[in-house]
Length: 456
Image 1 (cartoon, rainbow, N blue to C red):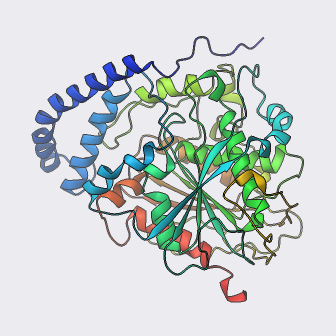
Image 2: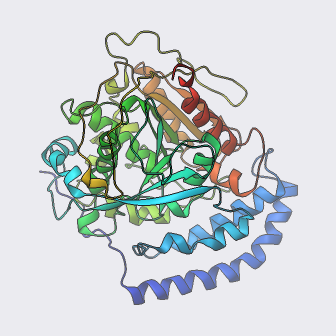
Image 3: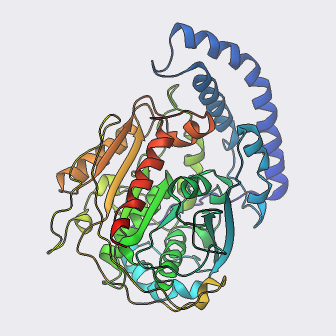
């Protein structure tokens, strides 16, 4: 008989959080002083990778030092609803602005996920349902200030309009999507709207897996209710956000009995695919450290047995395989993107374009719009994967890619030479120019958004 993990960690109390936050700040300040000159010496004597600039080496080394001590002894605490608005220092340090976009917050009512409750339990197969709840969660529209037809940013879809959905990483326990540069950058680079779901963080018994799947489903059905065709929805996620995309598409393809259509594209940046081995040893070629996942994964998977970490396809898709839901269906025709992408190569990926009539109206209360039955495309979603060759998750991602290839899944793979985990964030912060991982992500998203516009 399988039993769930005993005594998983929870978010600390406020006094405990303040204590450990003070300890990590003091330790970081003390250790960064000798770390900088040591990094300077090591860069000129034996750099981690030939392509790294000194600036990149210093930033990644400092980030690794910070993450090594940040959550070594406790998980983070849930952030307040408006905490993301107070992250201006990040933008000030980077010398950038969130300007040029507008943000509209909507409420994703729990009734959007409730119809799928039993199907989710049957698909994910927890040892017991525990105290996991289905709750309202916030969603955020990001739209360019100029060049779009929308006034608010949360209007119903127009004919053939494409939308990007961003699911943030953060080891399932931290990071608000709007506290990252990605929704704003994706919107400005592609000229389309981006919808971000602030799914619940796995910091308590009620927010453990599959709470995040319920939240992602609420966001997906909300977009369908606005008139977006499934094939015009592109899912973008980094790290644990990419893990959630894999779970969401698996549920759509296998677990929901054909009630929802598959999205048009999946953009997976440094995806987490193996929870059986979520904490690889730290390396000087990456900033990622094992200590956060050593606490985050037990909290996230508290209602699943240790065996499930190896055998459950929703938890460890890179271990189990089984990607038939990503294969072309009968009548799909020529997909046109059966190749793997390398940094120097170009691709000609094509997704189906279908014009639809948008609902007459929508409001900022996301649960007030009724869902329409989606038209289902026989074509599978475009699968685009980017990862760094020096990141600590690279071996598990390569195993994941090989399983996709072995099962016949058509995909594009973008290996970033010398790239670290979630490299696009560092490329953005360091203002690395043409050919950087950030520019390549934006270029691929823009190419997908632009496909089919000529027939509108």
